[in-house]
Length: 135
Image (cartoon, rainbow, N blue to C red; front, side, top):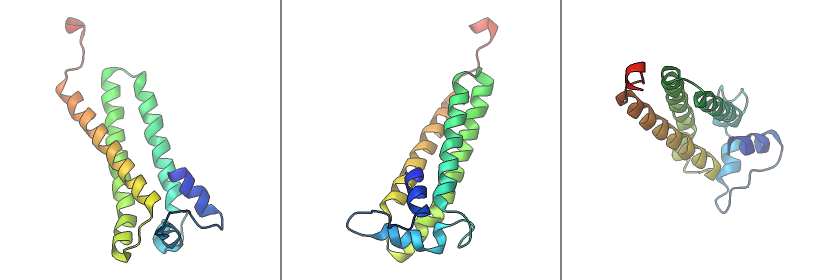
């Protein structure tokens, strides 16, 4: 969703949103950029966040248990930052009662990533790291 929104935001065309049309309204608002009003599109930051999460998750696949737990914690923190970052735009949508379905979908996606990584991290803390004596 973030890549699509970034591409659509970078072009002069309206973002297709279905019946409500809230996407174009949100894309034209100052809150669709960070820093507010003057920075790059929020969707660019979201794309970078999703890429970082994917790269850290990929790095975790070949990592030992200790490094894997650390990388998992990085993804917990990164996805939490994504939730907080997206929440400011979601709150703006709520205040204006104008909803961008793509933005809401991205908010739900990052929240799911956070919940799954948090659950995985909490479970990994309960499981002792393998040692030579219990391998």
